Length: 176
Image (cartoon, rainbow, N blue to C red; front, side, top):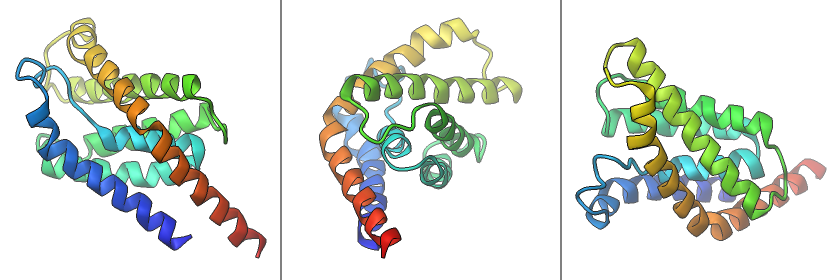
C-alpha cells in the first residue's frame, strides 16, 4: 500500500510541476488570464470519489498550501482551505466506489465551481477583489470549469486505474 500512496503523491507532484511549467506555454495568451488550470485538484476529486474523502482532504490541504506558496502569495492558506474543503464536501455527497464517467465529470464540474466560489468568497472577505460574483462566474469560473472538464476526460482512465489498485491493496492489508 505504501507504494501506491507514493505513486499517488508523486503523480500529484508531477501534475503540480506540469501545470506550472508546461501548461502556460500550451495555452493561448488570451486564455491565460481567464483560465486557471488546476490539475492537482482534478485528481483530488478522483481521490475523494474513488478512494476516501479524508485522504483527499489531507492531500488538498498539503497541495493547496504548495499552490499558495509557489503561485499565489497574496494570502497563505486560501487555496489550501478551498481545495481541502471542497474535496471533502464533494466526498460527502459523492462517495461511489465505481462511479461512471458522466457522474465523475459532474463531480469535476461541481468541484471546480465550489473551489472557485470558496476562493472568491475568501478574496471578497479580505477585500482583494472588487468584481461582482456574476462577472467572475462568467469570465473566470465557467472557462476554468470547461478546461477542468476536458482535463478530467483525459485523466479519467489512468487515475481511476491507479485508485482502484490502491483500494485493492488497502482491502488486502485490512483483511490481513
